[in-house]
Length: 79
Image (cartoon, rainbow, N blue to C red):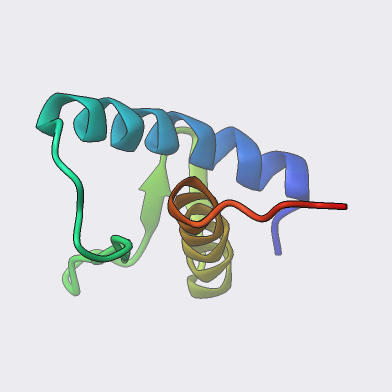
């Protein structure tokens, strides 16, 4: 299980790429995008950067990125 700081370290560059793609598309999306990592079944390890990840870690990163994507499209107003 990854620490929050590790999840952010892995996810932030990916989120930045998504933001750049969005600005390049310059269109309104009809629905909130969903992100899923696909693992090559022939490989035993899943690596992002310097991190070797297990299935739980990949799920944590996917959830974090998905929450960030949703907050970009549906921001929450705090009172």
